[in-house]
Image (cartoon, rainbow, N blue to C red):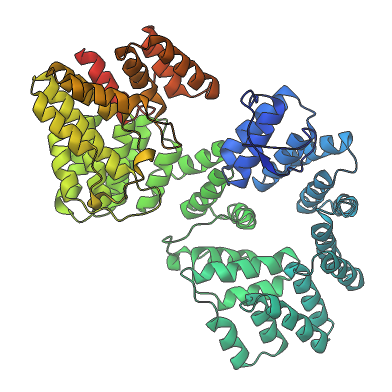
Length: 595
């Protein structure tokens, strides 16, 4: 679907059916895709679409604002500011442009400009409460508590669940020694969010009794408690409360990121002797800034590694690569090499060397075998992938993830019988979208059917096709409704077998099943080839062309459908890469070779 909206507006309303002729390559189409990708946190792809929109129209306001927001998120503040300024030169009163103009200037310490942006953003209902909150933060940092309270109150007036505004009020009242007011605000916060950790910590600051400290700590029960402490501590830091930030971190369990922040606050060097890099996944922009500061005084691989991870997430790939390269091969930490292999995946020699290095450091960790075997498979080096996957699976047969990878690698090496045998032993844990196991099973069965057809063992081939239509319970996915299963390819191979056996009634039944199939969201577009062939065998060539043209009109950009069209026309001008091919394409190619 697309959204029914004013193409010149950033506010999208109710979803409506996508018009068949909607131009997704238009400025608005590219912007819309970029916005949707940002909502899905697919930031790299979003930047590509938004950049393409701005290349077509450099003054398209919604794309300017969205790209400014994205660059702000990616810590590219000067570039983000330029786009926000251009957006404001088009519409000075645009709420979103002013809001992000304020955020970016606040980050760059251009406080007067930040206030200007937030002031105008308050005219927009969409950004009013958030803009008042940001103004409250700015005045709080200037110790102008009267204005900070006033703006926080305005923020709450327009959003009575604005927890950040309540938190600002609570801190101000505590600093003013107005404990009654502070406690009243904390109770309001707890009435909305009973597990709010800020409220627990503020209670402890108001009354530093051991009981309050224990209550605050007792509520933090998640798997990565350090992250909760960091989130709270960094919030205090962003409003200029460094002392409170340090107190929170002093209560936090030891972790690399906590140590970085404490070193930063104390203007001290990091003591790496007591730091473990395990289970540390830095992702915050604020931590990125801290790491940048720490690297000015210490040239340590761990600082570079963690900053490189943040840069990679922010799509600052060149800077991330420089940091990874500067670490050399000194780190004795396997995940470092796995991460570097991913960012240098386009350089085969470097990626493979790093994955092999990771394996040498942790040769009992299945993930590195998986990454190396997948890299070989993705680059069509199937003969190298096979021993990599096999060696680990043979010694760890209970690991179904490596079992699936081993089965897939056997398929790529055309060892269909062996793949079938492995799949019969696997027990894949069901999860949402878990179709890979069944697809491997289906391909192994159908490829064996094609092999038997080549040997003229048509009855054995039919037996394999019958098995291919089954949904074994051990492969992690339940069988859909019959009408949602696209088994046109299976029915076509059955037709070929029955026709060669001169069982024309059964052959005709197989053709009828193909043409009676109604396409669903689970359809394989490349099976259009099979459907056209079936119509032609039934003597309905005109109907075949009509059906195909209808599909092409409905899905004009589907590459596998276009591949099927080129196959039917015999010109083969559309090719699919190995990574673009799926089970159906590979089997159709085998059938065409056999023919």
